Image (cartoon, rainbow, N blue to C red; front, side, top):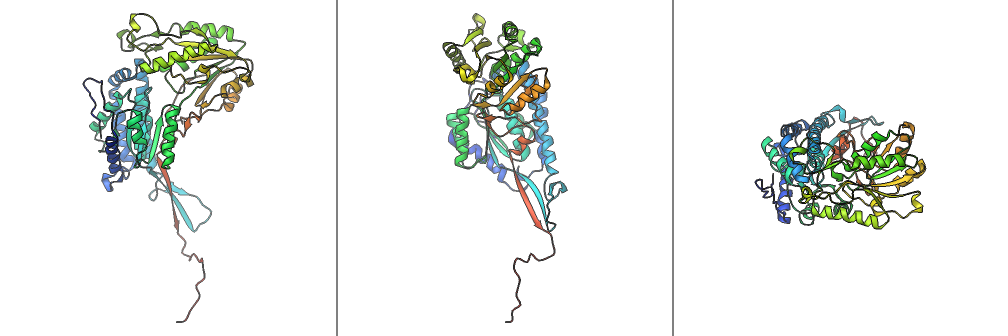
Length: 497
């Protein structure tokens, strides 16, 4: 386990790991993977690996209050949301412990479950599912520990070793997890955590020749860089990238229920979530009722320090965005939208008052971007571009076909939501949405058992569920000739010497 000189006392500094330090981490992972016999993580059984995964799950659950507070310090999300995420982190490690055990029952030569039925009785085919090797995992700052779990848990369950780089903005909980790994006795080199910027540390990691697999969550531009690094060396890469997901609200909805799902889908986690349903499409016939209610309820959202005692148990609040750079970017995008004709219905600025002077706070913002057919109207930048902040863009539609066209008119395809009491219509619409995740009468639920990922520029591959495990496995067929008859490819001729 390599911990790059992290300051556990002041929680303020971490090393920008050099190429040499990245090389040391990769070599430690390589050694743990390539070793023979009992010293090799790759040669352990799924049952053996599951013990460590369950021990980590238990450690996280037992330390949930402290870890939640640390995650709030880490990225600024409300404490109640950090606690929610921590439960998912623990559950993720426990889930993949179960899949690791199940993997043993599918492995040749010991398991009949590995047999493949074929038509030729002269042969048998069995399957093995072997770990890819050393995985480079690069995670973002919005869900630091949860994104770690989504990658590390299936990788370790598969038998891979890992070099993980958390975001330079939010390394705290990743480093705490490293301490837990030491405490549970995870073998040296199985999980290596390095800290640093993408330009230096991340670049050295994804281009390292001894990395076998890359898993990345982050922005589209960085994802393209990661994909090219993998392509140059013919290495598989799982990419979970940006989003600008639509939420379509039809005219038969319960207004109050719809308003809550709209708010939750965009403002949860301070709006810093790739799957945020940040493009609201409202049926023209209810827009006059729904939008005023949405604005009124949005204005009631409490903005404040998530670590303040009065906010410890509060739900449905906003904390600060993660950094000055992100704060400046979001406000700049709002200003640009207004210049392009966007109408701010509420929010749009940093809240005033002493309480907000020291933090990167932004009012929850709703901007109306227009109505009508997308082909007849120049798109507003706040409608087309990912903000990654508490900003909801609104447009009006007149019929189902127009709503679907507007929803799909995006370079992204991560998620989409439909709110309607007409379930036949809802099913019909989600079938037509070009996205990897579709929600009916809700927004944002994610379950470890189900695949997560998108289409178009939202990424390549899937995480979570058995799909997440398969991303770290190589299937190997073992074909045996079991007939006693000669193969008889050619006929031997008798010869006299």
